[in-house]
Length: 74
Image (cartoon, rainbow, N blue to C red):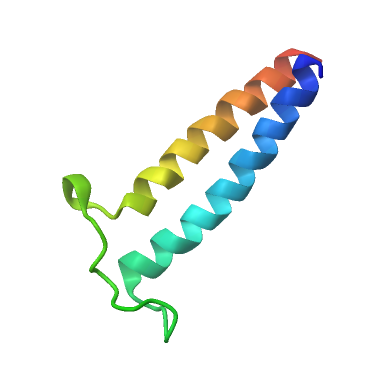
């Protein structure tokens, strides 16, 4: 596997993680999960925000770094 393929795979994982954690963050912060969440607001709140919010920004960072790496390799 070459570097460009690895970076593209990481970019894809970043996009998927960003969408998933963004969805979870939206559901948790605005409590619009009818029947899907057991009880909105009951998840762990490290530093005052739901953990999925931190996942959103982590995946955003992975996506940006991988995207920059793919772009630099062209």
